[in-house]
Length: 63
Image (cartoon, rainbow, N blue to C red; front, side, top):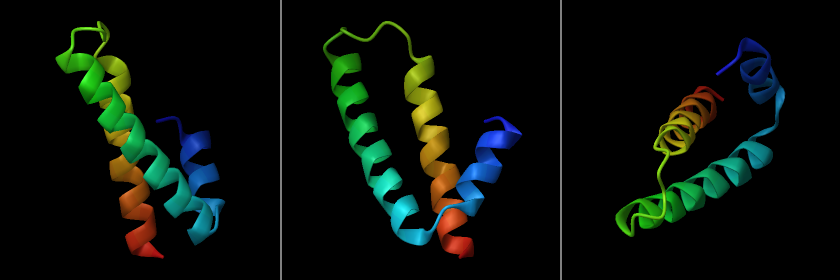
């Protein structure tokens, strides 16, 4: 992630972060389904979303 994006995430409040986390988890579930049905050709979006989830969980646990 870019440092600007990380700064924006750190400045958000806890409810916004948890909402974004749940949205990212839903996106991962959808991407996994697309991957298993061979609709998803680019795995980068899945890895980016997983990284976003890890970053969000780290920020939430720090707050």
